[in-house]
Structure formats: structure tokens, C-alpha cells
Length: 154
Length: 154
DNA sequence: CTGATAATAAATAATAATTATCCGGAGAGA
DNA sequence: TCTCTCCGGATAATTATTATTTATTATCAG
View 1: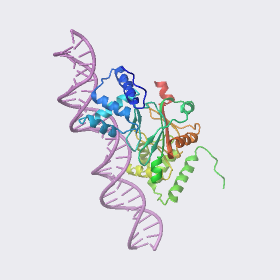
View 2: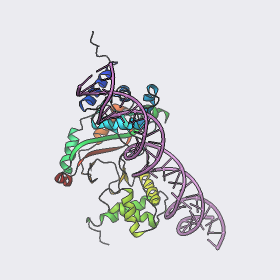
View 3: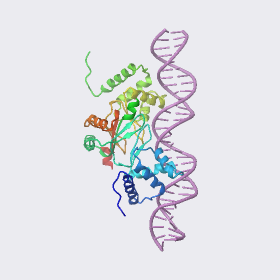
View 4: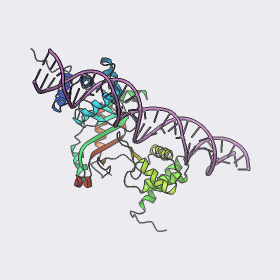
């Protein structure tokens, strides 16, 4: 059969395959519910909340429980297949497309999240490690403000 | 009169004066309970939780309510006199000594927090603002790992 | 293909942190 | 002093998340 061209459309499918492989490698079962979560993660560009993922999964699996979403995400976090952005005053947001830590910009009005590539954080992490004496394993870098759309409406 | 030498001991008192001045400037009342919270904030180097602040305040004011601590901290946040470090999976930590946003290292085992001065974040924020189009107003930069003590015990 | 079995899903209860409400009391200003 | 608003304390409510319990199902050996 013909190999699919690397179109923007095929990207989520590839990402899904990676995640499925990670599940299998860890000896985790691949259930329909989990596949549905993986698909949402692979396709979502909006850093969805658990609630949002739940709604999207519910379209295909109306009986799915919120707890299942939480458990699946916790597991995927452990396998480093999803990045959790945790906040104190709003629910966590998830990034299944770029699962390694990177900086984010969060709109404090509408909740939109952007994550352009910015100057490398490695030097910053190195600096922090050296000056603090900590052995660092991960980071969360968040900038808060107004997204372009909300600036207009301001 | 003689100017007080910049000893480590006099520092908290100065910081308290600054905070009191900020309250007055904002037309806020300076009550004994609030003074107690300010003192704890000015003296604490350990980025205390609300609960910890509550315990420390309770020594002097045994009848103080947790709600009062929360309300006072919220107010001080608004006046930019205290920095809240908000996390998803543990309660917030507060910094009343350096109230403007700066990077932190958090020990995932014991919760110790260090905040040495590291390479300036301004350029990073500028870069993020430019590439995202967001109008940024604050940031939270957290590095997670093991503090020196917990590394030994590991 | 089929059955055994261990992991998983759904439903629900429980927890933790924070925020809202309500009311009595105390301070600032007329 | 009187009044009026702000503040503190107690407690209820809310929100996000995690734990528990029981029934179901994916996986794999045969």
C-alpha cells in the first residue's frame, strides 16, 4: 500500500502511534477509552482541560467517566507522553503534542494558551541548578497576560 | 539620628514598614491581625504556606481564622506586596520578602524552595511576548528537583 | 478460538484547598 | 457621640482532584 505523505493532517495519527507504542512498551492495556483520549490529545492544539477532554471523548464514548480521563492522563504523564500545565486557580491544561517541558503564554481573560519556541531554557536551568545546588528534573515556565484577541476587546 | 546599619536583622523591620506604607497608601486598615501576618511574611525565608503562616500568626493571636490569612494575602497580592507561587498539586507558597516575580527551585521531596538570582528573565519575556503576540504582565518560573539535603538522603 | 485472570472502567464517595457568606464589633470621620 | 463602612471570625459552600468499590474487558496461554 502507498505510504501516507507527511501532511499536516497525518501528524496526529503519527503522534497517536507513538503514544500507543509507549503504552505497549510499558505493558499497559490499549482500551477503546484510552484510544479515544489519545486521539483527543493528538488532535488538540488548544491545551484542553480534563473537562474538555472528557467532553470530546464523550462524543464517541458517552458512558466514559471523568475518573477514567484523570487516570489515563496520570498514566500518560508518568510515561512522559503528555505534559501537564498545573495552575493554582484554574484546572490543569494538557499538551499531548509536545510532551516535553516548554514555556507557555496564558491569557488571563479567555484562557487561550500559546507555546511558540523561544530562546533555549537549558542555560537558565543550568544556572539555576548551579546556584541552588538542586538536582533539577523538570520545569514549568508560564507567562501570563492578554492574548491578541482579548487585547482588541480590552 | 544614626542611620541603622544594613544588618540582616534589621531587614525584616524595613520590609514591614514598606508593607504598612503600601496598606496605608491603599486606604486599607492596619489591624493587629494584619500586622501579625506582615511580620511573619517579612521574617520568613522559607516561602511558607497559608497553613504555616496561620500557625505562626496563631502564636500571637490564637483566635485568628484561616479565612483572615487568606483574605489578607489576597489583598497583599493585589498591592504587589507578596508573591504567590501557585501549584496544582500542593498548596500555594508565599514570598513577602521579594514580591516581584522571580524564578524558584522547588524540592519535590521536602518542599524546600530556593530562589537565587539567575540570568535575567526580561529577554525571555520579551521573546515570548514578541513571538506569541501576548501582552504579558507577570510570570511564574519553576524548576523542580531535589534539594541538596534530599540528594544526600536519596 | 476460548476461557482464565489480572487490569481497567464506571459510578460514587471522599478529600483538600480555597472561596463565599453572614453577622457582630471596632475605627474613622462627621 | 453617632453613624457607617470595613474587618474578623465562624462556618458553609465550591471546585478540582483522588480513592474506593464492583463489574467488565483486553490480553494471552492453550
